[in-house]
Length: 554
Image (cartoon, rainbow, N blue to C red; front, side):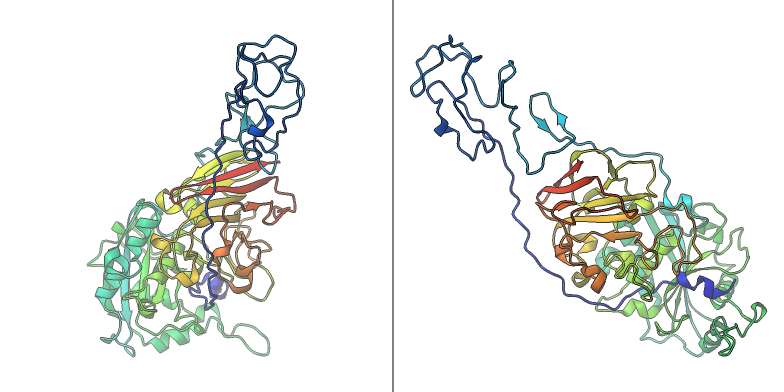
């Protein structure tokens, strides 16, 4: 198979785009508490019922035919000719007799009358939490033909630092100690996170990665040799467009180097200790090369790829590997920048890129707009965490009023669908309470800097399998490059489509109290098949500890 056919999974890690984040102050949360009004026989006047307390009820000259007043003489209104009872009427507690013309008064009148109501033990009608935690559904690694690192448990990976005879290691290059810090450092030792500390936090301590670092190892060939050999894959005849070199004339230079490394260290390393999931493959091999990165050159960039040959070392074979320049460790102002290696590790689990690879069409411009699998920043998005089994969503498929806590606390996320079919490989909405803390507190130019509700539209169907006609090669029917609809999309509360235009999020994209998806935000919202979304998502309340989300099915 031509390497060009696999090029499309190459990872272009950083997109050079910028947009000033829109800062808006957090709205004051307002809650309404009903006021109980007790009407004694001395206070039965229309003046005592203010419009603030009963906004939907007007006291008229209703004849009290079934309610008896106390024996005390009323002060402002004459009783009817019927004998008054000893029971005192109130507004909140109606009598057991059926009223003749008026409906029972609800405690919290809303601007929209729900069609599905859940009665409580009293006469009032309200929403209750109808969410549930699903079980026994398939995860991403259950569906993939192969993957590198298991997404849970203790995982050991191999890291090899290499240089070249024509480009040897220099004191100005990242040292072995720097590479060790980038992979295994504690949060307190590194400005952002190391690979290990990042995934401990993002997985809620369900994944522990430990890297064993070797090198610098000097390859047998100059860097120029590997560049020339790699370019042979893409060289075509300008007149015919046919490839110049046949399959027997080209070589996979990264795999050649990996074979050389594994052979050299075979007496020092027991490679069987790097197969945590016992699938017969080394879980992850990382190559950190001493050569300047170059986005215009395929070889000198960062990507996850696959070993090209069939070799065996200590009963296991190489498979998934990551290839990146040590230049990436010195990007920006961090003492050590491990973001590229964290992003590529996401691919070692089987995650897709969420940015747009190709601008030759009008599909999916802007990608996701932030998070680790797009911009190499912040936390992993909740969709990726669900795929990898780090969190379980609360599923809602009927009218419900649900409370969620900040996502970084415990992974709270709502999955809202018109019908839960037992699979996360479907189309639905994800709702999280976003806070600019922890993993989200860095890189403020490229991620939300305010608190709010983040709503994602996900189209994760996999029934069509890999589609060779698409630029982006994925197990999903949709991707964030060239399919008609995105795999994962942030629904922008301000509706200005800034992500599509600038590939960046704004604070105003987050939903706040009073925002209603399929209401005052994107009215008549539709599924990707063109059918109407048959529910609204309303933000009812937010404070520092929780948020109330109301789902109203029509």
